[in-house]
Length: 225
Image 1 (cartoon, rainbow, N blue to C red):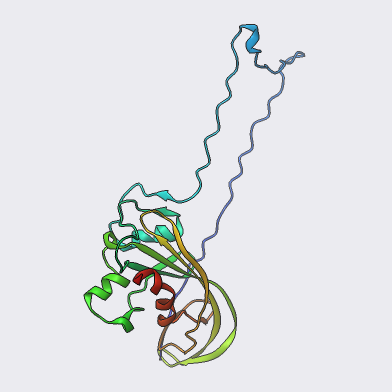
Image 2 (cartoon, rainbow, N blue to C red; image 1 turned 120 degrees about the vertical axis):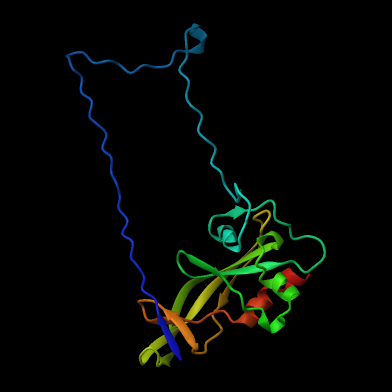
């Protein structure tokens, strides 16, 4: 088995505090606060600026999706792309599966659909490279880790033993053109075999992933109906 080690850089955040200047009366007399005059008195009235409305819910992107990586914003920034096709009409409804197993990082799963075939049509349905054809974005995020399943031994680049742990994942599916949520569910990491190749961080743990079959089963109805 092959072990790939990944070094992670820690980022230290800082907080800037700004202290306002003190104001002190310069003489024995102080100035009383100015109150707005009543409109009935005929004089000018003080205007109070209206608060900006708080924007809630998905927002349309200010630019079109030009590459698959742009669709990460559907998962992470509550953004949708109104120029993309809606999930409507005759099936199949193309989807892309975007994984995040490390906070701040997301990537497209290019191989989970292989059991369905390797034709171009299958690829364009389950893992298109062209964002302009995508109707749905599936976001799969690792949300927690638990007890030990087993230990896995690797011999390259040097002998080492790592712990495979139980993991929970969250699957969300959105309509790319509107940001409408079509599905949300928690899924266990049911692929509990020791991987042949693994990328591991400083914690020296391997997190059980959602199997390809489980991912297809969760998405099948939305794609094929």
